[in-house]
Image (cartoon, rainbow, N blue to C red):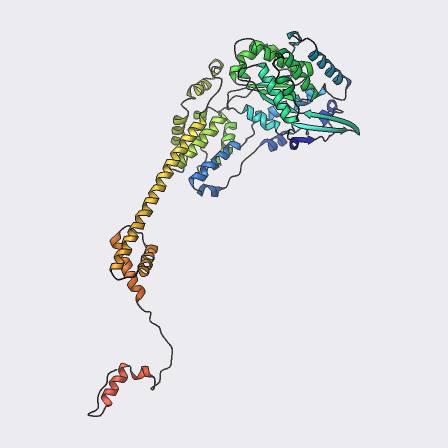
Length: 524
């Protein structure tokens, strides 16, 4: 249990009359306007143009930031509004201060302790809605983003000067087991709740092999009621599309959770789940107030343009390009409007541009990356392009082998960098060898080791070193210039008695002319 995840209850006045005098609703954050939803959900990671000048191995990491970006689109506003309404409507009939709430707990306990069979299920209209869409359209990401704006666990201690000790679990998100088993889902529920609240439901009920599924389900229902669960999200419901009674049992259980204690239920899945849902839930009875939501791929319209504008600024190539109609067209053609594929394609195209030293995005480059890395999803993309539900439903998931493609681009870049570094090292070794040979030859020409090194370094500063003979010649000339004394001018007034005046050529000639016959001439 992580106590830091708990939120202390703070109650706010409710504008809507039905929501008043209910501590579970009053402890929730305020209802948001559309503008507030956009501000809270939008996220644009840090970007600095100077990062484009960093070495490739740094930019290889920087492009990962794109995946944390969240661009709000119209269906995100719709989804947030539905969840907000659903959560509060679900708490209306479960006010813990009402007498009916206590009665429901007693009734639930009796169901657990009595002999229970499948007759406790009822088939009335479930409370909640279903989100269906191809993988990669952002269903799970959008739900997670919206739920993160809500506190998950709220601790109540006093309500209106009255002691009220209650733990409220606002939302819980589970994934449908791969085998579609009800027991697997129930055990996952127990384990998740234990981790959040510090309880021991799994040890008490989940570990026991004596308890049947029909016994575990009402126990889970009772726990949901006792912890004030606000909304239950079940993701990956396409795993129910299995033959046998498992899917029917699971869906009946979902129905009971909604109808017995009024817990709103949100089911998320790919189009392959439609067959099960339509078979087990009659079309006329779906929707239950909020209506189902189909999160399909984006159309090539202003929202697609808005999405591309949001990501296009995040270019870490040395030469960024403007978003043109050609780029808009090729990105849609290769991704078919699936956000996840578009993001990964944009990242891989930058990696390819960096690793190949092209350092600029282009339409042919994006097409080449798509051909290299989207081979496995071409049938799925073709089905989406057709727009026929029967073809789309054949694919449970739109799988983009991004990790494999990313590793391939990484290897390509590492090879390029390795070869570049090896060539640089080889060039450095060659230069070192030339310098050593030049040093040896300059020693033979009479230069000391120190003077030869000084000459070689002096020449190296002003010219590239690639020829031994040229280096030896230039260094020797440098050493001769370095040995020539500099002329110094000293401003001292000369006189006739100054020794320098006496020995000057002019004075010497005058002395020769003035000497008497027989006198020895001395030249100094």
